[in-house]
Length: 221
Image 1 (spheres, rainbow, N blue to C red):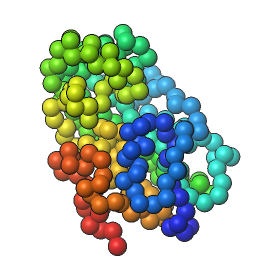
Image 2 (tube, rainbow, N blue to C red):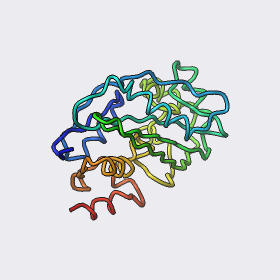
Image 3 (cartoon, rainbow, N blue to C red):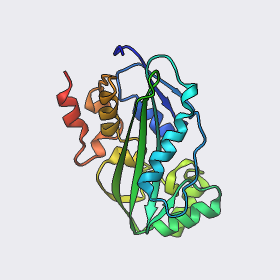
């Protein structure tokens, strides 16, 4: 396939839509083509996020033409429990209370498919998160801003007002919702020839203590 063929992000997430623009390749954005499944009983997060990302690509019969399709799913994992997006104030309050002053994981699965051949590459990234001991008042103010409801675990790591996280071990962009280092590698494997913008133009790059994107950028022709 030609490097001029575009990359299509199938996601309604504002964070993923922001991060995908780190690529200089032609990028189009639309909603997912399939329904997000619920975790099965006893299903581990790493398997679930891949299954969900693949489901969001839709059926192969919907594909065709040139280019590459990208989808992703992110969950929070605490004590083995998979936390998705809260559906109510009560669920958001319960999630944020459980996560307070705790170590947990954020797991993202990405699925990249060649739109013509349906050749696919899937990857998983996990980061360890340490939250601060925020107050009940902090939780209520965050809910009042209506911020938790499109976010796994009911919080955004990059929210400077709530500021829920004191440390991220691993990929920061994974916690935002799209590990660009894995995405670039997957696209490259499928022949998309991804090219990054300058590192200082990549959202949140400066918040990652050991970002693998620098190595990716240096390896580009």
